Image (spheres, rainbow, N blue to C red):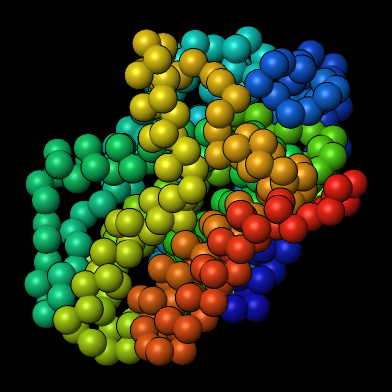
Length: 375
């Protein structure tokens, strides 16, 4: 655990330091977010936060290779992590071009599919899924590749969609990364496997990169992650899930939930966790596609009706809207992990209380707030 904490801190510090450099590069190259009707920022803000985050992820990877425990792990751990980071660099490069040139939606989608295909080409994909009672579901290679690409591309776009308020995307993905780290680490421990696993390494680095970027990006933001950052962290999060099923193909995942072999949820969690972690942006993505197609517009056409815009409309301040969406993301991400690893009455009570408190903050605070007060 201490070595993973070291990776987290290194990624956070390097990302924070590189944030200043990335901001200067963006200003010099003209990669600046201009103020548009659908935006909530009032002044132009530089992009390229993704470059700082990529540097932080890379630093975490390099340091991990020098640590006493992780450095002695199986070569596959660092091989798969390296493949995910290279794919992240590819999609980050597409994002940089978009931040500079404003690529069309089809070109960006092609870049995302290319990066996801890179993962599959180098065998970072879903292989088989453990079923309750010891059985396995093993799709053929074509089916597994298609599912892997779809999950990666969907996750990338979900993060991209939620990146609409200062600190929102970095916070949501950072929370998801911590939850996924807890699940993968506990899963390995409960099954007597080595604690040096790719999923834990990647999510520790990802959580650190998000934490290091937040001081620059939290309201009022001094730099945006841009598409270079949102697509990068979305791909790394999804890639972490792909590596987990590859390395635990013969492990009984139901053991993580306290021993009940009939519990289906832990077996499915490596598949659905990237989706469940990002259920808020995924819901936003689906609603946006339905809303725009019903209006006869392209599903990629931007508008100002995302969930975070709705929170602002009902009376939340910028900062409070972000914190509320963090609460929803944490409830879903940690709720899924807790339900799979520690199912019981105490867990249920905690999650119910969390849910009620989040609902109250979402819908009651704007009504209770006195005129002129903000948070």
